[in-house]
Length: 460
Image 1 (cartoon, rainbow, N blue to C red):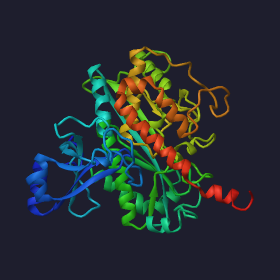
Image 2: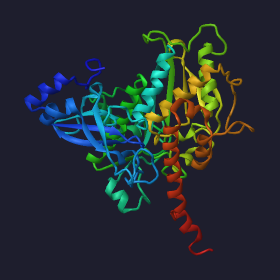
Image 3: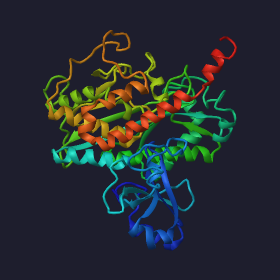
Image 4: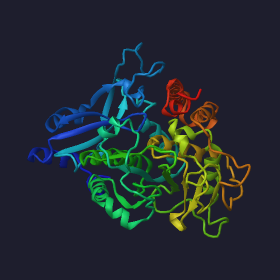
């Protein structure tokens, strides 16, 4: 992609920039289970002298910690018993880019390998690569895109923590969906985000106010899955850094307040021929909606996998608080044409015909959610699964529809039984993430929440 997307660099271009002093720092980063960037800052010259060819090392515990960076027990890959050995970080120079909001800084994403060179199967980037390779072996080029929602606050991250995240002030005062006036009040920051990310090799299509005070959505231009997941990850990371540099805070929590809309990540997907010239989802004259048999079977797989792969779309306790009727978040795993009450929405025409999965929250790891999408779609294609009849009407009010899991515990149980996941990812990967889900649930089950104190402190 270097040379075709603004902001991306070739290795030779980096050498020139380091020699001229325009770049003096390179961030070498991996992606952890939560979809965050972890790694090291390297001086530009040492990066070129050593890391570019030999890579770098990072502690394996980065694939065995929770969001608090607490080393968690019981992993096969990494543990106290194994001494928390190193993983090898190998730069992927197709991801090398400037970071314009940080002075004289570039970023490269790294793949993870064992000392013998074998890829780390549990690494989110490798999990997605494997599904992309499965699709390619069957003659399909996958294309995906993210639409991400988030809230802006008149707080710094430090002040929000001092308040214990209570009584935070959103940047907006009223629902601002498509609202240009309120959008103007926040444009000083959103413009920095749009332009900064675009200059960092993350093409932005547009931004808009969303269905909550201080809530925004940005759409990222579609790409092949690994490239799209890289863009998504750099976008989330960069957005929070730009906010922090301006003494405001942004959250991608799925549901930061019970009475306000949650933040989603609408996932668009389609399959193309190997050259990327023709969508394999479109068949003019086919019914319904010009959907080819391949598209119908892909959609059938998505519906079949909606419950058992839900963990990869909603990985936290909080993720499931978003699924509330009448809030534009889905509760039913059904499909329709251009219907925002359904879990899956078919949109577009011709080469733009695609499926929008509305189940993922903005807190999802993009590598895992794209991998789950391809795994389910390929499952449907291989078994020629037909989707049920297109749903019409209000899916929030219709009885007896298949439901998205209500809790992390429900989603974990569904993943444990999933044939789709075990066939696509293998037992080692599935068991790694099941263990993570169980530990997240255990941490919550031990916690005493503010809701419990307010409800029970005096009155029980």
